[in-house]
Image (cartoon, rainbow, N blue to C red; front, side, top):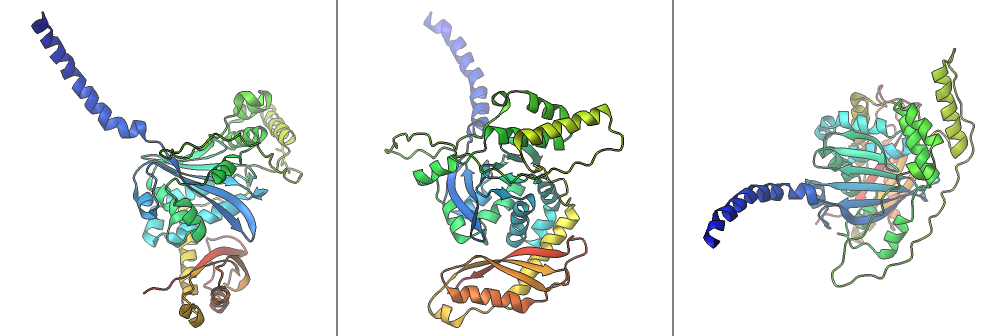
Length: 407
């Protein structure tokens, strides 16, 4: 009897082997999940702008290892400013990529950069959460869990990530705080998770995004349906488990209500002869504005980028950086004292290249370095003229000046 069962048992094993082999091949796809690698705060001109988090599949303190890892990753922005305009937010990515990427990389990714920039038409307010997720073959962008769009090229995410942890990041401290390999202080994680949008704000953003895509039916449903039934709240990020030390659970922090935006009159341009359908759409938008008391969530008058115009702008920024660096001199006193650091300036020029405004965004604790960076920018005026396909009477760009001693 025992011998009679052997063939059946062997057959079962033979059938299971291919299944196990397939499962092993698919296991990275099925099991890969991201955990928080670091959290960092970013301020501009002395004002808090946002808190950023970097989530990775394989935690590390090595920026290069994270940038080159071909696996799921995510950057998440939680807004601290009362209002963060679309123009200001996208400028961070456009100029950061121009500074940290080569001309050939910018050209290769120009279409994706234009698509990404044109997605970012959302006026952000305190508590909003912007998520940029890298999968194995695509990048997904969302605001408060409402999807803005997808870019079918995972490599684009790694170009974006250089803005945060590349050679010239938003700030040296910002980069350092993101490269903690998961060892984030508990109080920082708690504070980060406490920054969330209100239910009404989540609902309004979802309706506005749907409306911008022509989904008026979804916007109408958002007004008529109960908020709690339709809101999809962003997930809470958890810290990685630390061996042998399980922290005691802390009471859930009370959610801080976002500061209300100043009231503004929404300008509506009526159609010459509104059809019943158009009237219904107008009433939906009016109801949304009254219900949430918001400025325009989607900035409809925002400039539309083409691959060519965006590439032209980014190559121009790179040219301005090189132009400034020709004027830089490392202060002798700073070299003698081994003083190093990054000075980040915001510069506004006329179309003819004349410098009008120099704002200090970030400076090291060494005044001589800041003074030299400002002097170099002043000496660079006039810069090369603004290209014809870059619109606007004036052009504002960020200039990072890195003072680093090489042995």
